[in-house]
Image 1 (tube, rainbow over the protein chains, first blue to last red):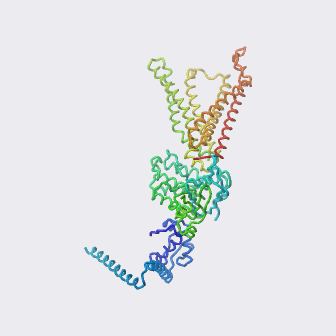
Image 2 (cartoon, rainbow over the protein chains, first blue to last red):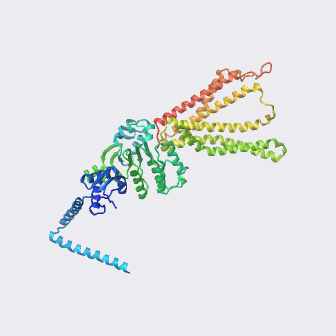
Image 3 (cartoon, rainbow over the protein chains, first blue to last red):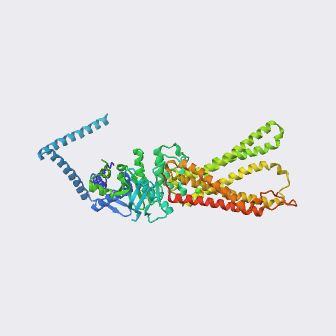
Length: 138
Length: 234
Length: 265
């Protein structure tokens, strides 16, 4: 996992966002055990105290639970995970909408362009899968 | 959590009149990685040498984990100077033996494990090693001691990026809640991801002491960028 | 700690010194074999002479090298880049200095015994046939041996004090540590010799030693050896004490510099 941390923002916040994304996308499975603070800190290249702070915040929010002897685990609460996913998506959407407003795009223009892009993206994915299939056949 | 470093009004004036340190007071809790950040000649190395009892201050007092006796301090402080402190005629094994002989807290298995990862063998002569490898070796020796305080003077200066990553990784991997690390450097952007706190020093005086996250939150920029703002020369 | 550093000091200088002294012993053995046959012919005499010259050269090298290596050892481990590690060791300054003094004493004594021994062995060779040591010579020989031991101890301590003092004063000049150490070694060395000379002369005059070295012979009217020991023993003891005091003064000044004014550039 690439951590890509930006030094101009508090690192612990970025770690929280990163872990939330991993949970929301399903790459961290519900109930999965997390590596130790030290291991995570080493992986991310950050201070263990910083990692500790991020994990404590996540615990407070409920996405991560800690069992004293066994360590930290991802929550099994499907609803919370779903809500987190929506919150992350909403955050990104807000940023996107601000940028589009900056361009002067109206809502109608925006929705039309989004349709077009989504269709074109699907087509590209399908073509990519076809060539992959063709490649296997050959 | 106890104080590992307690300095009160440390001053150092050299005979020529040069005031290397001017009433520096510093407090460092255990379990922290602190960056001593400042331009060249700001007094960083002087302060570290004083803490290691290699230099006697002209004023002020300090204690390391409550200790003031030089021998007791040296037992719990592991110092990495900014130079080549191993004699050239030694082999790697000689260096390991030396550390094991004189430092009770030296963890030889840990050192050997790290050396294996670096591809350094025991029979190698230090003479034949590149500067980068020697720097890594010195760091491994210093970080393999289970000390209460690690004083690292410019640990990543003059090494390639991969070596730099290894050094930072080693620092994080070998510290825990009972020990602290004081890193003196001017290469701030490389070191800031692993710092808890930053101390800015200039002209022998402490200009700022803060957690790195507080700097980022308050000023909306990295410690490196904030440093550039504070120490702007033009 | 002291003994640990002593071991390292010894390890550092021992190989070259063992080699040089080993060569000296080998040459001595060779000469001892050759000497009785010197009359046998020109060839043997020439070889014997060459070996004798080599012996002298090796002996001089041994003495110089012993002192040189030990002085360099202290300078290097305390005041060069190695000093960053040495001075970071959990040892007191006394332990740092005394371990070196001990190493100096060890090799100084070994060197003195070997160099003097090899030459005495050759010089006294003709005397081997005799029936043994005459009983009246025993106290004198005992006195000589004890004086020798005291002399070695006192000069080793003075020489190591000289090494400590010149390097600790020399390092206070960070730009020219090495050169200044060398200069101070010569200067303080010279001062020590002046001190020793003046001290001995005053001592001998004071103890009416003039009588000992006057026109009287060592034999009295009946041809018996006059017992000079009662005069000689106190002189030797006072010389010993004087040198040890000199060594102590140098020790304490060096110690004070290292403890309070260490300045590793």
